[in-house]
Length: 419
Image (cartoon, rainbow, N blue to C red):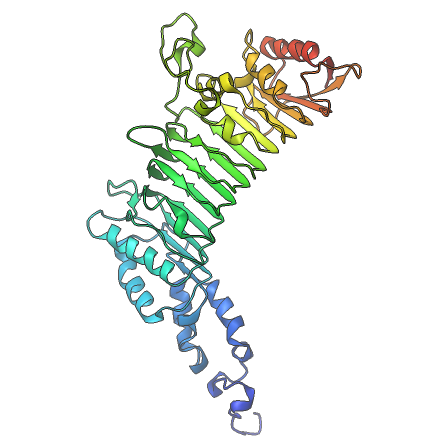
């Protein structure tokens, strides 16, 4: 180049990379590698690479990953701001298959923008996407959720679906037409249905969402589920059907849940909810369980509830046997002073339990006091698991409530505790 010689043009033998790129070695890589690089960029930036060189002119169309609405670090763009770009973008890229697709959406209006979002969502499904995420951020236009069309989701390739800030109905929540779907996550969603069903699901998470059916509790049918998380749900607690493959489950019932009983806090009050002894919902033994029967095959289980929520204690009337359970974490809901029946019941129905952790009157994650139990002898009650070797208590301070629980465990399990 110093002697004025012209740049040598690349021929067919070097993959046809453009002459004008000169020392651009990136363009010499195979299309598969370049497509992977493009899939990591926001869609707007991926399109701009068409200006780099002739080789890049149409590469963005076949990128295997789309990230729409991720440009910049500010608040996500509104549907109105995204509309022109996304419409043309999806049209020009055609039906090229996708591995991943993420939509990040800000403000939207109900009449015009929601149908547009549904169109984009369904277009991604038609591109045989494997992992699809639709994240609708907090809206300032008076519409709390993007309402997804109540049509079956049909895909032979979809394996992961993450939904944030959407409203779904019955036909959408029947995933029988998605035979490859294994991972499903709802965050801050409104699920309006009688049932959520999938025979292929392995992992499901429902967090900070409303589960509402006009006539009864929503049922969850996922017989091959391995991992489940139900956290901070509003409206009624869902009914879990049989999950024989379940290994891990985390269930936390908070004040958002509408299932509560005033008698739990004050036994002198009159109440006829599902939890009370005089309730008409005694039902048909285990068939009346809401959560515990579906969780009974778990190996690792976390059960946390606010004190005035009744679902777990209601289910204990028909407490199943947790034959596979090895590790169990409970909060103080199970250890109400003067009424430790709930704790005793679940321990007596866990014949193979190895590790028990109690979080007593402490939110965590850090706890000021941690204690570990030690068996005083090899002699144990036949009702308690012979495999139980670790009992741990975590709390903020050792007050009278904690001392009551310690006394019960020392007698019930024949243990002593040390700090």
